[in-house]
Image (cartoon, rainbow, N blue to C red; front, side, top):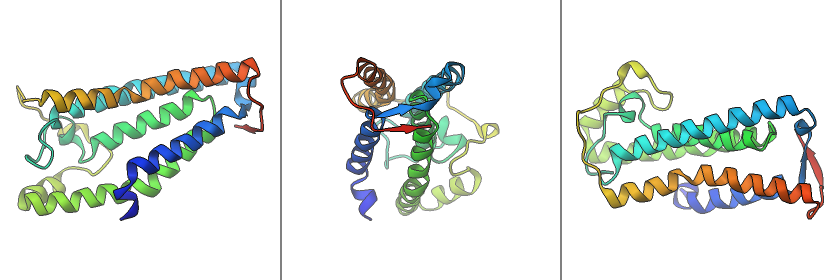
Length: 199
């Protein structure tokens, strides 16, 4: 499937389009500072939760993808915790723009594409792990965590190199906050024109 094969490039392209949209727009909610501040704080909070969640996932899966069926830690409460926490971070970034339009666009994009990716991954895991995955599939929710199912071993081995790469990727959303703040500074300086408004 085209999206699955080129999902990283497609995500990067769509992210660039959103950044340009943000760069050349006026955020109408900024005219109501109290509301803008609340939205910004909610965004920062979601990015924080999402980033910690992604690191949590990386601790359990680093070095073991498609070798062992990970069923503990974040993978005990849902089958796709990495995508769940990525969505939280993505929505958080959208809210940091102090608009409602951007997080809605991010949510729609996620709903359109990522269920297909999750289904594709589950078909692959089913082929690799057979009955073990089917048992895991039946007892564990797909996307929204069920915390009553949580279990974790006393110890787990971590592939340091893989975890380090995952850690760097997890901080992407925090770096995005800095980039958005830079864009806001550019707008306030009047370097770029305002072409339209967003709510």
